[in-house]
Length: 413
Image (cartoon, rainbow, N blue to C red; front, side):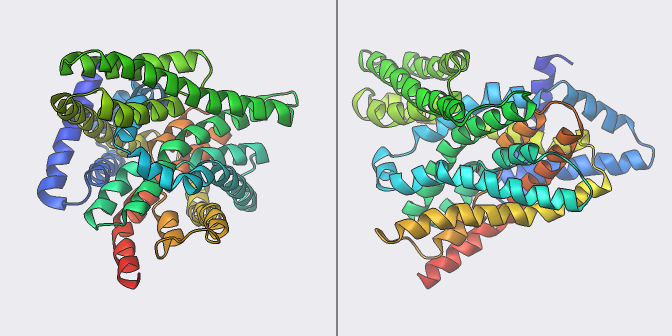
């Protein structure tokens, strides 16, 4: 099936599921789309058990023509991160800079280690033997959080602005850091030679630091171009070129594309919006990128819901997934609780912030995409099955229950 037909089917499903959710379920759009997609996938599996295999076979053929990892990591992610960063106020971000920096760096590393240790203990206890390094790889891919589903809920219940900024800021930057840590650990897991701590630090600095600097230079370059003209069609085209060309260039230079897009989005969304755009351009630019964000998210969550058709679920994998979910939540609690406890000596936080950040740390498409990029083997099958279960649980259970937790915290605040 060619790419145009595949895109046609996915966008049609996304539109239909969005309508059904808006008309009947009335839950946050991304969660509703994924729920309907998941139910459709399970329905196809049940029909296949009763001999109706044709529909499931066609769905599997559709999905096998979509490289989820490449589609998200080399396609959608640059647009999603830029669109999200475009609407983050830099002054608000500066006020929360220390907690965001700690959560996106120390928090990711801490979560990676805790998840790695706990999952190694759980898997070995269940008779599923994979190396400790691969358990750390799983820790790295499951640690980045996804703000998409939870942000709409927080806005609906009127969460404190500071809390929104913490979750959005952390999620923007920990995606890039998490991907870098994942790539380093995956390289170590597949390498026959020893890699020194100095080399690991150099790679981390090159990918993350270099990506941030590259994104700033790209953003400033496009800012000067935007300032020299007043034509919203050309200006939108320039931002589109920045995202597509900038992400490709960062990847070619072995820099972190996700971090580059976040920094570039912050530059255009703040400096560009204030000093290089007319009111007409701002309005059209916002509408364009909000639409891109909505469409890509809808397609992404349809894909996540359908991916269950391609998973190899054995009984012990399901048992492992059920045991690992609380371990991932515990790791999130530790990686959030330690930095906040340290910073509480110097500043105040909103009530129950640790519980809300823990429960609101949803996992999404990036975790699934990274798991799908693992080399074929038993490690990949185990990690993919567990990753999918954690992602579904976090979006469906945590995503739908974070609202009442925020409301309760406000009542006790």
